[in-house]
Length: 180
Image: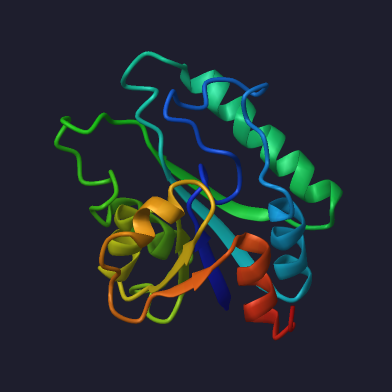
């Protein structure tokens, strides 16, 4: 199975320091939905692992998050793709859970869902250190995008072997062997 695990905010859709709190605020990054569809058509399985502390903070409820993910799925399906799994951490930074990135709980859930012992060799795409670190704990390959918080993340030291791309569309091009 060719699996790829994506962060959501800052990779697929525009991020906001004020949190993405509604379907109306959920705006795809240009080319991201098409990139997911292209990967699917080429035989990739796409999963999303996302921290959603807005739930713990009372900024949105579970139904709103579900509506956002349904909206995401509809848009990707309209382009001929599919996101096989979306997992999220509903906890805040101080809740002490094991699922909140940079801890590997979300990625462990992805691996278990697909009956894999780990994510060795699986591209893990994020815009922050915590995305990359969490995926690497299970053997994932770190792919940083410059969208979202990516430019800020580039100012620090990156995990060894991190590949850096402009956006998710460039990641898809790389994985599909397309020269831009």
